[in-house]
Length: 263
Ligand code: OOG
Ligand code: MG
Image (cartoon, rainbow, N blue to C red; front, side, top):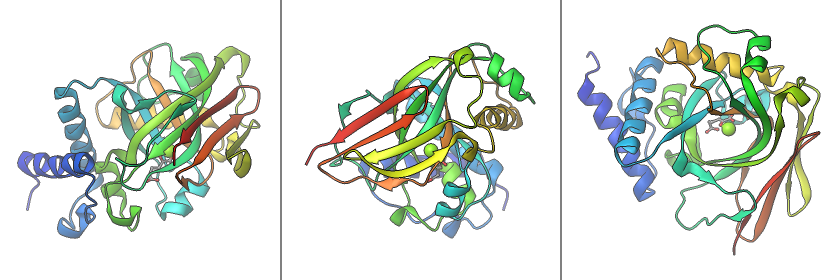
């Protein structure tokens, strides 16, 4: 059966309500085995339109499944993107409560802030030239699917790549850190290291993650506006959030980001 605008609206509304009511859903592909990536990005875009109609503003994008660690953790092997809104941003060094979340996890990511509009196929030199700042972030994921697992790529794309929240930490002008490959990224819980990688874990070079995002956006007839926040994708596996802990991430030459989960 051909996919209709109605189906896209229905499935994005289902995920929207799942997020608001914190009710885990069966993967969409269980009921809709013919759901493909193209339709999944349409469901994602429709879900963002619903959030915009409720007053949220798009502030950037996230890349997902850009490291081997994440691909293996999720059992999915192709980079994807999701949309970030202003309502998803959590202040650095603030408290993050678990009570109104489903099953959140966090992961350390290099973030970029663009300074020019970027579109189509770009080189790493063009990606670097198009960016203002480089920084360290913690992304907080919260899948709307049962057990945060066993989903196929169209499920996670439709679910806005499991986006929930993000925390931006220290940043520096991009000119001061042109090479990101060799920078050490570390995540700690209560000050004890739990995961570590180098920048090259992200597609071999985090600048390539920006190139991949701009290319994926072009395939969806979109460009990346100047001033966008871009999460380049987790360098390590994600960890489950536990009450009474403090999570931090550190990026060599740049600085840190953290949040605390009350008991
Ligand atoms: C999918 C989103 C992946 C990343 O940084 O690789 C992602 C998921 O893990 O549910 O955000
Ligand atoms: Mg991520």
